[in-house]
Image (tube, rainbow, N blue to C red; front, side, top):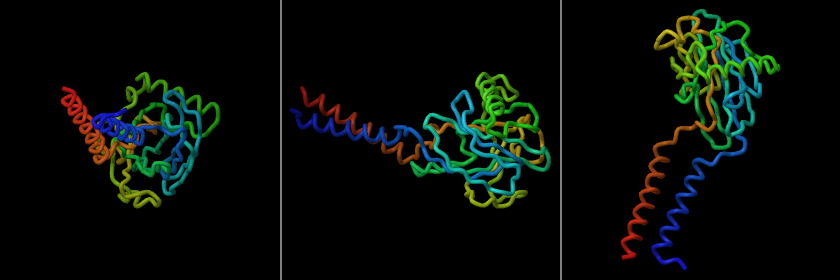
Length: 240
């Protein structure tokens, strides 16, 4: 039989458990919607931390915005292979929607990683063929080990927001999204001018990494923990 104090402790623990479950429990698979473009071209894949396993789509022309819908296992990564024509400008612009959880994240989310293969902007793996999946998987392994021109996976560098020249407003992508690229030479905006930043490049993000908890969620978790600690202190004092 619970005493009054024990009931309070149980209620706080139960509430905290529900909160943690709501913020951290992964689903088996998540519905993802992507709207994206790359100057000049890209291929979209997903896979594990060590291998590309699934090809989603590709496009060779930045003035169009493509939309994809697919189910992504909760422990998987999104991979975007990109290349430019090393002329005028280059960039990756996108928004990603987690349809199950109801949130968006963008190409400029700081949790993205990027790596440079140094293999040249020609003929990157842009299909779901066994050879392309194997090539991309090998480059993923090389980046994981730090054995590539970017010395592993590094942070991306954000350029201007959607709507900026020379591209103008790309449809079906929010204004909050920014064009991004890898800066091989310290350029604070590697999206212009045209330059070979040790392409082709690969961007990746883990589904489990997103989103960064909102301040309100963190505050709620902090209040729950503080309440639990206060109840435990009252319980200890009441036992004397």
